Amino acid sequence: MSTFVIEEWYRGNECTIYSIRKDVDNPDAYTEADRFFEKYGSFGNAELEGATKLLLQFVVNEIADVHGAKEVFFNRFEKEAQALPYISGRQVNGVLQIDNFYPGFPLRLYCYRILENIVVLYNGGMKTSQSAQDSKDLSMKFYEAQTYTNKIKNALRDGILSISDSELIDEYGDDELIL
Image 1 (cartoon, rainbow, N blue to C red):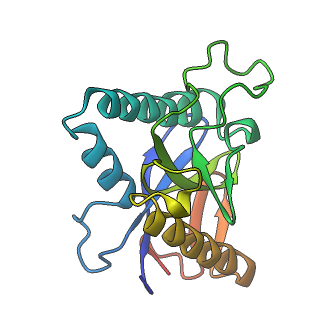
Image 2 (cartoon, rainbow, N blue to C red; image 1 turned 60 degrees about the vertical axis):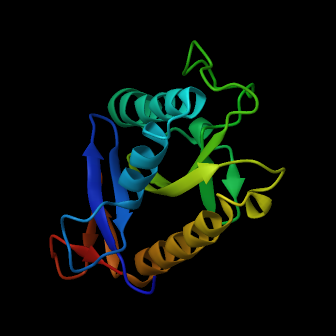
C-alpha cells in the first residue's frame, strides 16, 4: 500500500467524493469504495444489502448532492480517519429530518472529510465487536484508513496536493493523483 491513486468517485452539487485505487497501473481497477459497495451490496444477506444501499444513498444524495460534507455527518472518529454512518441519535442540527441510521448499524465505511466539499472514501466492513480493531472484517480496513489519511494529510501539508474549489490537485497538475 505504499503507493495509491486518489481518483474522483462521484461529483455532486455540494461535494466531490474521491476514493482510493490501490492498483496504480490499472485505471479500470475498482476503487476501495467500489469494492465496499460491490461486496456488501451483493452479500446475499438482506440486512447487509439494505444497509449498503442506505449508506450509498446517504453518501451520494445527502452528502454529495444536497448538504455537502457537514461536520455533523462525520462524528464517528476513528483515530485519523472517520467512519460512516454518523453516530445515530446525536443532534444533526436540523440538517436531516429523518435519522436513517439505527443503533447497531452493521457496517462502517472509512473516509476522510477534508472540507465540506471534499471527502475521500476508503473501504470498510461489518462491525462485529465493540471496537473496529477487534472486528475481524474491519481490522485491516481500519489500519489502512489511518495510513491513507496520514499520507493525504502529509501531501496537503507538503504541497504535493492542493485544493481548488472542490477538487484535489497534485503539484504537477496531472489528472492522476498518485501518492
